[in-house]
Image (tube, rainbow, N blue to C red; front, side):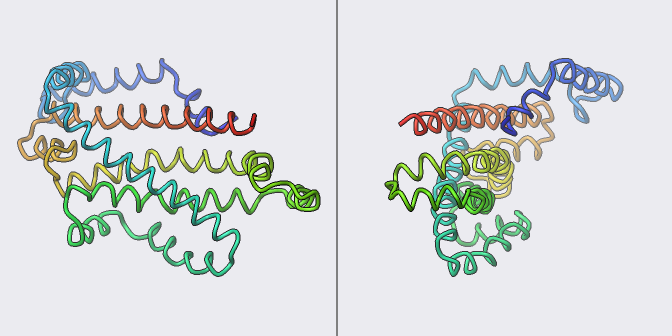
Length: 253
């Protein structure tokens, strides 16, 4: 069973309701909306924001840039992983770069990127940078773990490259690639929104979060945070569903 399906099945309604009750009780105990706003107030404020045009403009801006960074990193990661599996020199060349990206704090990259790029493209670059090593490592691991006997048999019988990719590599690489995408999808939203909070590109979700913090507007802060969570979940579900459909279709061809 895929990792993302296990995670989804592990999320139970009663557990969600339990933590919502804890949240509500905590808010009532503190008695201050400034410190901890109630979940009902957050939903109310989110509903109010959703009725305004600037809300959807901010959502569209962040979704386009963060999703764009993820898709670019996914394509680059797959290509680089294929090259690394084929050429050892490429793998050795990329190893220090991938290790650096995985170990250096994202805040350092954001600050450096503010020097190199405009704030509008900041989320694209940071999302790309954080997702690339995850996709690269997962895809490369799947390719290297492919059954050598099947590959040798395909070579002996002169199986065309396209059929070899669909029938030999795809079934063995796809589980690790899908697991890597699941991790990368959450990571790209965390890193992308963090970049927007620091860089404050005009009309982004990150800018709204920063403004809510500056003006101590706790309901808005929670409402925009909930928006990010919902966007991340919807994008993840949609992408993984499309990935499963594409994988099934390629295997039937």
